[in-house]
Image 1 (cartoon, rainbow, N blue to C red):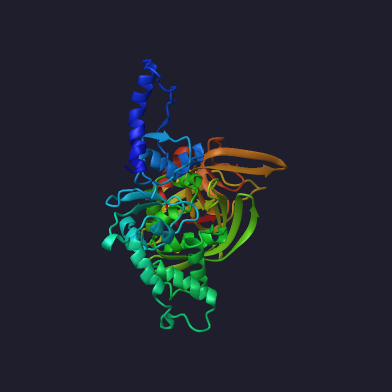
Image 2: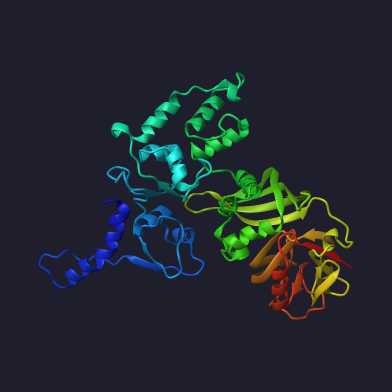
Length: 462
């Protein structure tokens, strides 16, 4: 019986054992404490529970017989008292039954395949993987195995692959040094499809991530995130965001997140010149130049982005927590071209303290707003909504006195820390009141939030 089945049986039989002890059976063992049972709440996910209880996702999966990271509201989960074992043992398992494996820090597919007597290709097929790249806490399916005359399929394939020489005709020339050639050969043995065609820098990155299991640097995470977005691999990009970002921007709704990129009609995205501006402990700030190409003509739009990343407590892997954006080239404050032809855009008149929801040249709705005071004026020009948050915390310092506003609702940032948002601390709309943002009533902000999307043009003028 596998460990997953044993864990499930343990939960089912525990009540019988405790009942027998309470009945006073002769020579009964001391009472066994009840396991901690958690009822899944709205917004929960395995990552959050892992951090809350200090238990790896693998241990949670094993204790509850989970075969994927999906959990449901109202589901009962056993919280194990120990992190080990986080995965079913390879020895003694039924080779005719598939097994669920949760990736641990330092894992790579070649190692997992050898441990469970299968092949990289078999795991990729069973787990629907597009490449041998895996990340910590990812769920894999280890398929049932059988081989000729008792020999495992893994031994057959690995031995055959190891015997294959590096083919110079595949793109690895004589000038390539021995280290690079070895990396390419190992990735080839692990069935990496571009082992002999990718650039040396990309091969080094893939080798580090898949074979050596090193943690990607904050700059690499930023570049990888936009690569995933460009390739429309939204699930992979979503995993590079912190739980906090997912909650604030999309209320943990992945489909809403993916749809926001689809709505932009994005052809491609690319991050370049990523550099660490500040790094201290579990936080890093990365500056990068990001180019979107959107629309039917794939018109490029360039931005300077400042991204704040946080290291996960358990794995120390970096995730994106916050982003601020500055357009590389500011347009004038004339009516935007995007406003023509029935497109949605936002027009903000500082002089009249009015915000207009525009559809082409038609004003769909008008709102009374509060823009920045003289000391903190609102920026003017033509911008775009670069991120939306259902709620976000805002803070700053005014004449040496810090201020903090938690859970500001319906925030749409369009330039650095400037945003359009709902306001619960005043109702003096029509008069400049803010530190540069566009204050609206909560009801008006919600309507405009639902009207707009990431990429919506924001035109601000006097």
